[in-house]
Image (cartoon, rainbow, N blue to C red):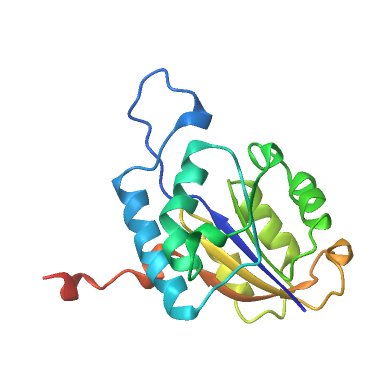
Length: 179
């Protein structure tokens, strides 16, 4: 059994005129999203064996903000930065996954590919498939798949059980508890 986490980066900033897309950092909302997700991951005991991340500033910063929640020793995370995740297609993401040996993999990437790949992988009978299909794969969203595969090369359309589709607003403290 394999587990795949597909995470879209946190909300990013457009405040720097002339700044290249790859250099855009997270904004305050993105930092808040990752703080919430980091707490959730720590509570859930999420421990990926391998992390594959786009080299864009916003994905690197997303991962940096999550490191505390991902491992007992954040420096022990096995992270690979893949250029193909930036502006890549589903096929690019799959090519990277096919080369994995780890049981549990976290991919930190971008839309539209995170959304497209998640919809392609999700078996219609998955516990969270309806939620994904009815939702926008917004910034900070996470799709969690269980794949009954011996090897990552066996990934196919509908081969993943989408066990969780989590958006920041799903774990955000209610407005009444903030007062």
